[in-house]
Image (cartoon, rainbow, N blue to C red; front, side, top):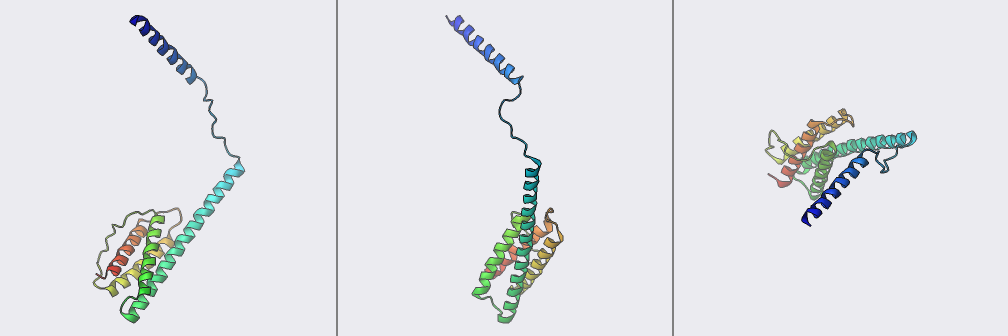
Amino acid sequence: MFFNFFRLVFAVLVVSTAVICANAQFPDSSPNKEELPKTVEETLAKGRIDREKKDYEQLIERGEEAAKISSELDNSFNKQKKLSSDDQKKLDRLEKLAKKIRSELGGDDDDANVEDKPSSISAAIKTLQETTTNLVDMIKKNTRYSVSVAAIESSNAMLKIVRFIRSGN
């Protein structure tokens, strides 16, 4: 009885193996993704290129806005010798812009080394303005296809300086 059961299981295994091997010999019957007509492919490619151009232009606009804000902070601090609540809001906006720029450039952490930690808030604001200006210049020099490690490091340094100014250390 046990022997008959074993023969039955063995026969089922042999037949199923033969069926699987036979199916492997025929072309795949599942529907493949159909190729798109050339005009559709061209339209998709043009749309992708337009999106990339728009993203690059927005990156430049964010950089210019960051440079403008850092200049405004410098002017405000030189007049008042302290940061107002309006300036704190500008610092928040500057930090958001720096994070957005960094992520669009492909960076993800802020382990930047600010070589010379500013000794005072006024020195930090000057350094912030210089770093932001350098960042905008680097963004404009590159194409939308390139990734600039220096620009990512500048955005990270910008974030560190903003945090230093905010903490007042």
